[in-house]
Length: 330
Image (cartoon, rainbow, N blue to C red; front, side, top):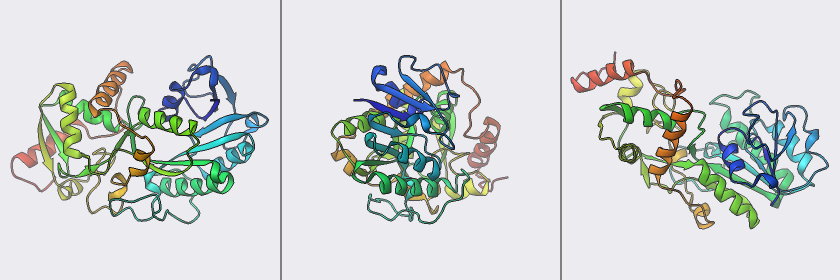
């Protein structure tokens, strides 16, 4: 199966590329991120924001779009490929749903409407992905596979969400934990995503699918306990409720990775229904394996400063307030 990856050298795209024999792999990107990877693959250079001419006049069985940040980028790509690829796979997000306040959303739930601003921020990202989906479906029709992924984790993770919790539990005897232990969350090892999409592409699967761990299977408490078990640690978890964390000025998703208040309007986006993808063969490796592999990668890259989480000093301040009974954050 001849596969074109738009991107392919950073996090999710890199896992796709690693799952494909290099003789069958073509990468299209600007050549700036990890340019030495996959030397035996074909490399096409271009810029999705302006020049995709290198894509024309060639053919592939599958194109996998892991880097479509803006709808015009996506349109430029699908227009160039519409007559030369058998299936166009667009990796989207469960954030595209218009009403993410409730759990159990299926693929038929309405998605965000409107013209998104041409600026990539946390606020615009869901709108950009929703419009990009419509572009792909409008051009490719039955030759499109839209995958709405939940939170992707694993080696090469660029946002450092799971690495934050791995480091905290590995290094700390007492750890500040957000919200309720029973709070449901969803994760998806990017390697499992790649394996499933490639298997689906081989059999010509099309349409729209949510992809993530089974709704209700994983909770914040289980995430942290499984991480601790994988690392051979037994930390004391001090749980802080949503109001305490918000009053302390902690930003959901950034200062406390993977946490969103249960009053948040987007609280359901990590509790979507992924049963259709499961029925189509999506499966998950053990969470402890993801933790250990992510740790190995984090150590190999030299344990750099993380992009997510709070400093040890700030965490200690909050822990002292909680353990002394003073739950009014300073």
